[in-house]
Image 1 (cartoon, helix red, strand yellow):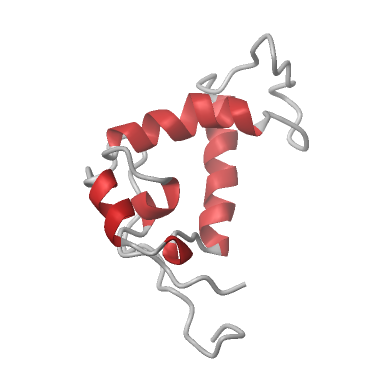
Image 2 (cartoon, helix red, strand yellow):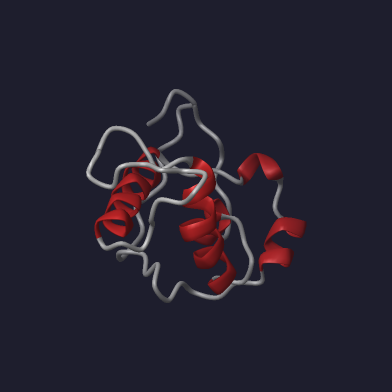
Length: 113
């Protein structure tokens, strides 16, 4: 259990398919869910870092004029703007224009810092 005394959220029952994410009604999810529940887990962040690295390694996230990161540097780069434009926005658009958090957890998660 986390510091709140509640059990941590269960992991996704199967690996999330970022290539063909389940399509949600993003507007409805944001309109009906409390912003305090637009959360991700520590494991989601760990998985996200791995996904970014995979996309960089595959040449799907690439340096730009404004972000000349070194694709071979595993400590620095790419910047958040590059990741948002080249990964987050395209994936969440396919998922129905939802946020990353609600794409992963459509029912929302209670924030537990």
